Each structure stands twice: as structure tokens, then as C-alpha cells.
Image (tube, rainbow, N blue to C red; front, side):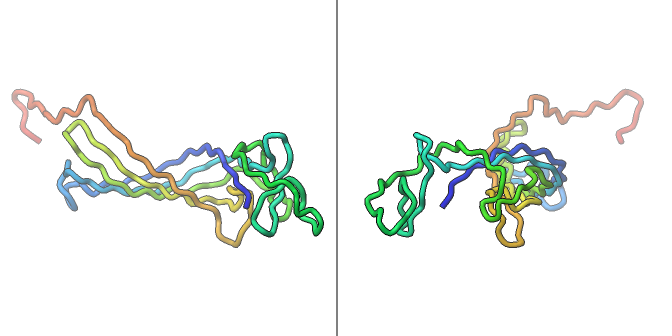
Length: 176
């Protein structure tokens, strides 16, 4: 029922495997898949939309409506309201058990993607990264024993200004 957002600041170190390495696929292949894994650290700041524009709390009723008053047997005429999607409440404690928690944890990014080599200097990358986190409070709820995860997808355009592949042989030396 609750809607939340978490701002995330993350830093990691990754190892990347390019399939167009001259063994699996020729170097500079038009479609060049890649994969990576890493380890990092992240901080998050969860916030929730718990109140309307006037600062009144939302009350979730058994009929799935959101109202301006708590559900009681005699107040069926309580006004229906809607979420305003303003995340005004900084979350400090778990909704489940009011326990405080750390707002930083380790993170393991798993990435898969494809480079599309348009020219020797220009490529487009399409990728997705699944972030496995070391916390179960990214959404402010402690669920089962599994930790939270989130997915980031992206498209990047890359241009290399100096992609020179020439090698010069000095006079009187052998080619190596």
C-alpha cells in the first residue's frame, strides 16, 4: 500500500568480460556482448508519501480506498482522497517493527549488455545491471530472509576521439 522512493549513492569496482576478444568473437564485431561483476558500497535515503498536500495522513480502508479518517464502523462517509506522490516523510524506522536500521550496505552489481560498433570510433551500448544489496530495508520493510535488489537499465553512446591503430616501425629495428 505504501509508496516510497529511495535515493541511492553507489560506488563499486568491476571486472568486465568482452566477448569480442579475438577468441570467442572477432575484435570489433558489429554486435559485441559483455558481462561484468563487481563489489561496492552504497548509501540510500528512503522517503514515503504518507500525507496529503495539507499534511493529513492517509488511511487505507479494507475496501482498498484511501480516506481522510481511520476506518470505524460508523464513519462510512469519510472523504476519499488520493496519493499526491510527494515523498515528504523521511523514513528512519522499519514499518514492520519500528526498528532502526543502517542506511548503507555492500552491493554486488551484475551487468549484461551489448556494444553495437557502428564505426571504429562510435558505438552504442545497451545494458542492464541487477544490484544485489546487503540490506532488506531499501523499501523500509523487512521481508523474508532475502535481501533487496534493484535493476538499472541504460543506453550509452560512446565516441572515441583517438582510436588510432597504426604502429610505426623505427628504422633498423625488427617488427615485434
